Image (cartoon, rainbow, N blue to C red; front, side, top):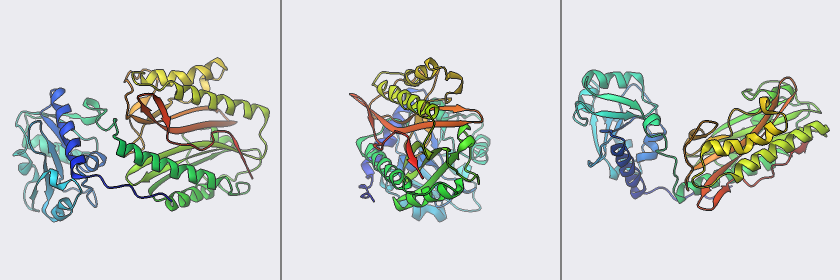
Length: 373
């Protein structure tokens, strides 16, 4: 188990909202419109008990105080959010038009970025109320809004990574032979919850299933000779973990060892490519060239990794053609994989943060191929 980190403060949330509004202004936006989802929680700490047809809207406008419009019955929850003192809260009641209430917070002809989780119902309601306004997806115009983590956020990601490491060490002692993928996945889920994860995601891919990079845990029974990919993580204290290791049931063949060693070498090369100013595609290329030179290029994973934070998948994406520059504070997964159709697959993946001196792994567990019973 790991200590609960100190909560974020009103000052933390105020700084995030101020920076977001400033970034909006620099891209020519009138402001940001944020509805329930990870952006709302990250910016002001408000997490509605459920996302419903009732409009909740955080409005961030450059040079103005942040405004949060909520349904009246949810106002007490909004006022108890950790960042509530950094926003001005107003409400609307059932029977009132929430979009009319929102018009007073927006420019009638403004150009806004809207969080990706916004329901079409709400976006269309805003368009009808203010027909001259225009809207863009937040991750299109400000894809790196949450990308640069402060020390407090990196510490939470490190704690989540350490918890995932502990789960991996424990799962190695579990019997694999004769059990279904779903049973091993259930063990992973239980162990993650014991390590204080509030949400869990587990994928177990065995034998030929491991050759499918998009396999979903099934009912196949594991047996000796199987390669098994364990891909798991979740949310701990609001921040994501993500760990992938490949184990083998019984002794592997020489080819299986060779492919695993190749994948581990490629993943290390990608990690060594992490540095401020390096591009995402350069990190991707760091792994891919090893696999291509070994003759497995057509079987390589589609991308090397993805950003991680309050969600398990977010910008930046470490893939070919992605020219985003890395900067200190960015956190992302770095993995490498080879998938041989109809035979077996191997993947190794860690969470890494970019520092002024290069990459720092947040996962510390062994990346070698473990032998399980």
